[in-house]
Length: 137
Image 1 (cartoon, one colour):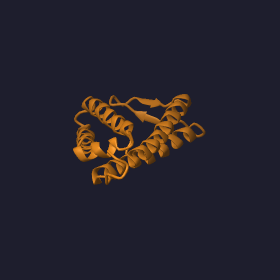
Image 2 (tube, helix red, strand yellow):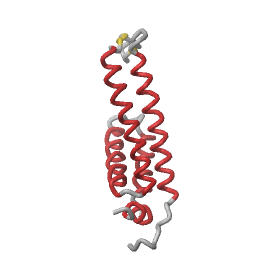
Image 3 (cartoon, one colour):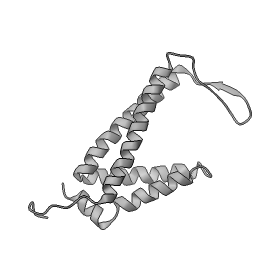
């Protein structure tokens, strides 16, 4: 492809970037909340048998840091998606497949995750999307 040719970004790519942005905002928000949750009383949850469990501060801190890092990685992925990086296409496809596999283990509650990630896979795998992602290589 010559430098004079420019590929217009498909709408599906913009939509995928918006979905990644939504995930980034959620991850960053919940990461910060988990990090600051260690300064108050530790949250508890009740399992299906009715037993109460306290979530430890160390678990909250580690999970909060990991979630925050994941959110920042999503911000980087948005940038790479919007400029048309082939690396971004591979990472998006890989994350979508991983999400589908883990959603299968979460059935019957994972149907929405499966649907959204199949839609993402289809949007980033079209011919126009592939042309978009191959332009920077």
